Length: 180
Image 1: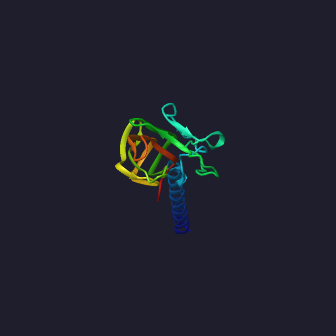
Image 2: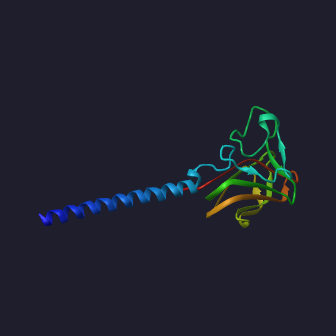
């Protein structure tokens, strides 16, 4: 009888331990997913990102088609150019709602007239900036920037010397997420 009780207690303890480990792993995975923005775009109206450089930036479009780079619809049935742009030696700075662990930034640049851009992109956390992209002639269209996973609270796109057609850096849309 004693051996049977000990055996049942051991089995109960083992089941309890495996259950705790399983729940612990689920909590860790849930925490990682939240820290990584649930593996979705964290630069959007819905996620509360801020364009903190808005006073030094300009916007194309009007009304609900104003060219802020957070919106989901990037093209409309219109000849208007949409986007956010900045002059030489200024930046477009995107403040995220919270700190996220990210490893991918995608920038859709205005690609009319086959432009080449001269820009530097920084990811920062607590004002410590890391260069994640530095090219003298970034070919226009979508630039997908992969960088080592890091905690980010802000992105800064610095216009070093405009593009091959004008002196501005024109961003139609930006997305940031953790890519598995």
